[in-house]
Each structure stands twice: as structure tokens, then as C-alpha cells.
Image (cartoon, rainbow, N blue to C red; front, side):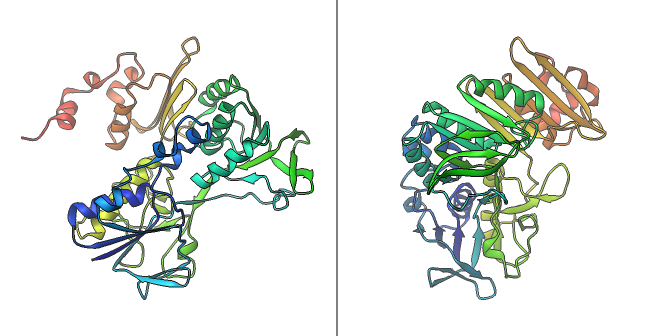
Length: 420
């Protein structure tokens, strides 16, 4: 079997490992536009802050490709694919495949309407190691940076720059930061943590224009009319599934590349996994992109097994965020807003800076949020994934000592008894 994988991050790595558990003989080729060894993009802010060296970012040891018999074509972008001919093209050269995995991730969102965006040189993204290197160089030349976007990418970038002693200004369109991962209460706690290290926030606002001298940026103008002086500007409002390669092909797409329960696209033999894929979300049963590491890893593994001929079904993704800002650890699952028809159980201890929240619908947990006290968060993930009714013990869900012992005996036996 001849496998070709486009991409070189979590989904690709887990697919390779799954394939090799089944097929030791087939050839595997990884093609990536990045020249670097496989790494975690989620850790580049640590490198930006000069806290770790570049090897700390590696997903696997440097002998990974050789040990698993993987050929690589790194630093080469796939320009197009021809599913009907089973070909991928890189710089005028074609490569054939029998099974193809698209693990091409997401593309940075560029908002329309920012005056001067294409004119100035010091405009950066923050999604790749290359972006990180370029921003690190820019940080050496300026004391002030504006980051557009108060989501995870923007805040990690801001935290890294703040650790370098820079004045960082974060501009967020929504009413609070991390709007997809946290509610307003939890977001306020993160905001205070970051303000303590010098990050300044501007919510319910956006950047209308860049200003400067010739090609050198000197500041931004906000929609509200406020102006901020800066020597660098970072676009960090998020990513959308990269569907460039599937345009003009028979591979179906919507908000991402559509896949079935085996991570196979509408074209047999072509699979997709990770941030580019649109698979079923576990709670709603609807297909949607979920651009987080655990989902990419699981999807890649399922795709790899199916590519190698072992049928595995993907159970559906669950939104999960494990965050750390300063000394503040946070975990969130599923729906974090209250929503229509939802029952909310919450606990806020302002003195200890502890916040817990559970969202229920029909007696089942559809979302959970934990700030600082995250010790039992894993149990809630299990309850969500299994679709277990917590109605009999919902009054103790946020008790200090809540744990497996609070579950009904028959439920404990069913979930945790090891088969003989």
C-alpha cells in the first residue's frame, strides 16, 4: 500500500503510528510546506518567550520518521490534488498514492476592511514556528505590540510577548476574551491574571486602520477612535479549515472537509483529519470543525487505521480546552454559555479564585468549566462523553469532595469494572 499524508502535525503523526501498527510494509510519504521536524504549534508561545529551546516543541523524537519508515518531503507545498487520478502535485512534480490523508490544518483568518493592512511590513501571524521566529525578531526592534484577537492564539501570543517585557495591547471584538472557550466570569479571571503582567485589553472594539511612516508601522486606529502606538501588529483572530486543495475537486466540503465516521471524504481512498476536517460533534450529532489537539489526534488515529484496512469508527469530537495563563489553570468542555433551556450549576469562590460551572440539559451534562480547581475535571469529561444522566446526584456535582464514590453503585460497576 502506498500512503501519502499532506501535513505534519498531530493528525499526521497519529495517523502514521496507527498505520504502522497494522502495516509495516506499505510506504508512507509525508509532505509539508514547513521544513521543520513535526512540532506542536500550541507551544510556540513558550519559544517566543525564550523559555524553551526549539527541540522542546518536537512532537516526537528526531528519529521518528526513520524509525517508522516514513519518507518526507518537507518545505514543499502541495499545490493541487487530482483524486480521480490519485495524484498530488508539488512544484510541478506529481506523486501517486493509493490512500491519501489531508491533514493540512487551518489557515489564519484575515479580517476585511483594515486600512493599510497590505501596506506595512510589520504585520504578523502567530500559527506556525516560522511566524514565531519572525515575530521574535520584530520584538527585538520594538517595545509595543498590538494583537488583534482575544482568543487562545492571541492570548498565548500576548503572554509570550509580555514575558519579553513588551507592552502588549489585545483588541477583541466580543464583550470578553476567549469567547469560544470561557464565559464572562472565567474570562474576567484570566484578564486580571494577564493585566497583572502588563497586558492591556480593549474589548468590544476592533482595528480599523494601521498608521505609519512609509512601510514602517507606528500604530493602529481602533473603530472606537482610540489610537495605540506600536511597532508591530499581530493578526490572531483565529483560523478556519484549510480547504484550498479540495476546491475544484469532487471532495465535498462545507465549513471544513466533510468526512464520515471513518474519516473518509466523499471520494473513496481520500481521508481528512484535524483542523481541516468537519466530522460529527458528539453532543449535537452535527458535523462541525473542532480545531483542538485532542480531536486532531483522535481523528488522525482513526483515519490511519481505516487507511490501513482496519475499520474504526470515530465517536465524535468534544470541544475541550486545557489552558494555563500565569498561575491560573483552566479546563472547559462542550458548551460554556448558558444557552436556551439549560440548567446551570455554578460555584464562585472569589477569595480562592476558584470557579466551577456545569451546564445541564435533560439531566445530562453538555458543558463544564473549571478555573484553578481542576482536579476532578476528568470525571466530568467522562460523564459528558458517556451521556450519563446526573439528575440523581446533580446537587453534589460541585461539592469539594465530589468524585467516583458519589456515582450510583450500578453506574460505577458498569463504567469502571475491568472485564475478566
